[in-house]
Length: 225
Ligand code: G3P
Image (cartoon, rainbow, N blue to C red; front, side):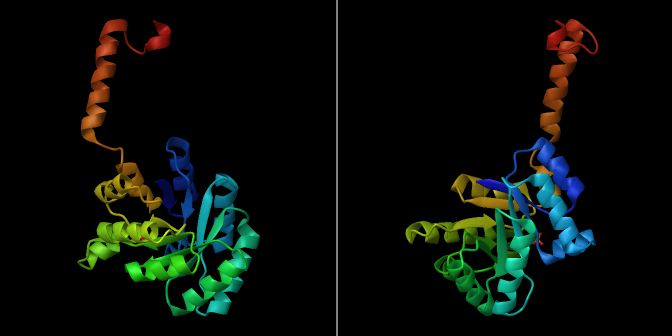
């Protein structure tokens, strides 16, 4: 399962890239709003930092299919290789998806709340579809199960499309999808940091250091012995 950062704050992205194995960055208009700077100033900074080997997923914001396609072309011009255009899975979006597919532009169908939206997006040629796991949970549905169902639909129908699960609030939701082998998850920085932060783990490592210090002395590590 690929792991991506669902955020546009460059300092957070740099910190996560320094410590953890991640595969790319996803944004949406609300994420860009939270940063509060000019969209392409921020997006280009991210692209420059992560390089062309990492994926970027950036949303078209026009409300018509034609406008979404124009947005897509502009985004690709600005951000280059390995950029996926996020297209909302609404009626105009599906029309845009068919055009993007014909013109060989890679896209991610977003705002997925139902397996049928994902099925149609896969038929339209999406590389990824992004079900909103936690937002589904908040509506009283089982977001993890919806993401799993979409994964199964893609397997059963021999689609090349992958699930790019989004909207997580805890590590259990992500773990369930890792176990199921879905294609990718995009996760906000605070949830990424919480995947590892755990008092029991920290205490175990503190005990090792304390015992070793008693054995060899303060500040010494294996290379000093
Ligand atoms: O792009 C969709 C995803 O970012 C939604 O996440 O946390 O706003 O529900 P959230």
